[in-house]
Length: 253
Image 1 (cartoon, rainbow, N blue to C red):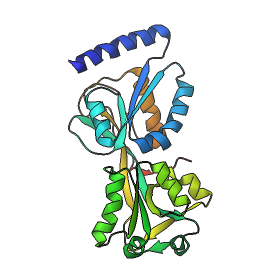
Image 2: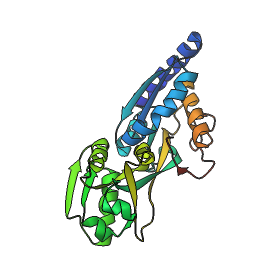
Image 3: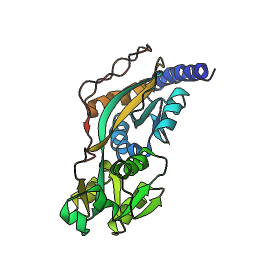
Image 4: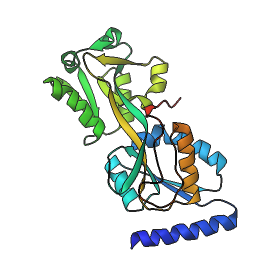
């Protein structure tokens, strides 16, 4: 019933947009990191091209974004790629997660460290229950070591500022610290014998849902920026989004 009601709203919006010469609404669900560090640049370009579109953004963890899409609470979502039979998704970029220290930290000067050396330092973890938290913990668990001291916070930005103050090391998404790295305020530390830590970030929509012109226009922009092909909206399973090139690490610069 909710989907039927949403379809009726979409149809009414399309008629209104045609009469008004454009416009309509765009409702996006996004994971916090994407919403903070990636989405603003996309929306700046979109708003310049579509100034009459009303934009609404909701944030949540990736599982919550998936549910928003399934419940038709949002038209388009950005999340860590999870996979769901009723969701179409296409990878956009690889979210690099890097171990960071203040520029004066001994391990920053060293540039590389073993898990045991890292565990001998204070480690800052953020957002318990998130994939970032579990990825950080897994580095130590897989190596059979544990940090001698840890600080738990609920904010990525707080974790970054604690690192800047020299209070510990933290695993943070590179997209969130690019400016700090460019200024030399933070320094990355390679982990000896470890593979790069990455998460695939995808744009998603519910299968068989027809999207408004406003949403299709936004998807077209996303496709252009990330070099992925956005198929015509035909409301059929397996259509709507498709991948063209392998996702690459994203830079907000």
